[in-house]
Length: 280
Image 1 (cartoon, one colour):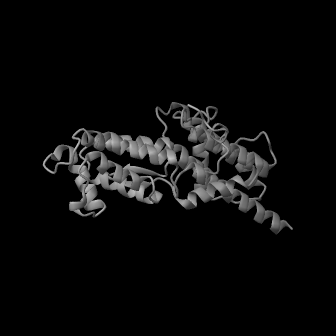
Image 2 (image 1 turned 90 degrees about the horizontal axis):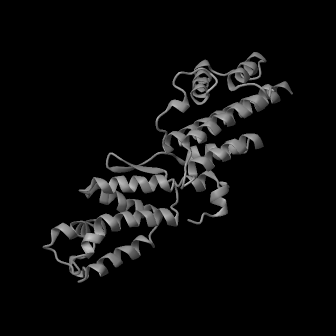
Image 3 (image 1 turned 135 degrees about the horizontal axis):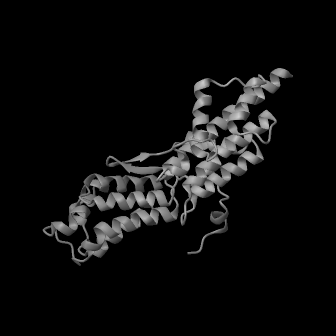
């Protein structure tokens, strides 16, 4: 399958990568295909609309009468016309309405396969939502995406690591969540090295050096939390349950680490700038 240069190289903003306030054509098409495959193919096999043939038209009835609130006497005679009517609406409506109809179908669905297919499509196209307990729930927020974008502007080396993390988690054909997480924590380490002035330091030694010099005072709980995360991603720290031992890492894990590391980068950067101003 042909992939655009921007997709291969990963040159996209977080807001363009994690679809939270928009929907790509590919994601919209994927969700339509899920509805069509599970509900409309058997419905179309009947050829003409029949209220009595409940097995194949129950979902259409629910959509027409309950979701759209259309008049019952305006239902087309042929099933293909019925589907065409919904299809035209689906591909012209605002992106948020697509999620409305998908969640409606989930609520009335008798097929577990539909939820699985929808979640697969949402993950494949990096939607900011997942089917959780029968509803579409956000796995990220606009503020978190802004946090990533702010961190990308801190330093070119930091940006390179965060760009790599985004690229690895957004590869549709072969997402690499493990190394995306490593790149996220490497972005934190890169900034800590710069602030400490020691290019050979690990994250742990860099943070200790920064505190010892009096540059930045970091709360122990916050510092220890990040050192634990660093140990989780490092093969050299002697951590028994390292990142490499995790049997399965998800897109949600990679996004969480990207957001968390970006927030800590912003925190360190602001602390560092404040110290420099105070020193005059």
